[in-house]
Length: 88
Image 1 (cartoon, rainbow, N blue to C red):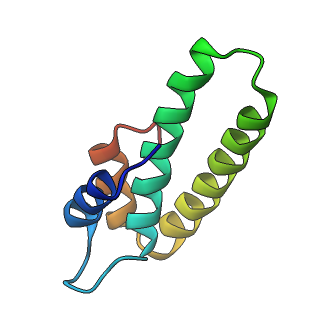
Image 2: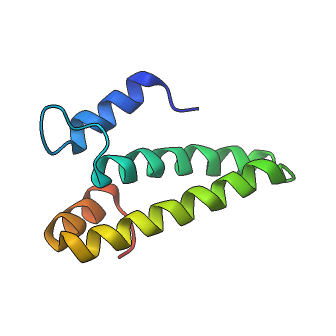
């Protein structure tokens, strides 16, 4: 589970301005961290299909946000993919 401290660190690292908490970059960062944590959970609990469905929904949402970011802000997209270590 993503704690508020971890979430605040992600926001601090990826925010575009001082009051930024919901930009596409921040949302992708938070989703990426949640996906990583849920992936480790599913490695030990292989039959947890409810969490697997949630994971697939998160991956889809992150893909949509990354597609949007790639179309609107290509420079921001490439830097975000490098920061998070995602495949482009």
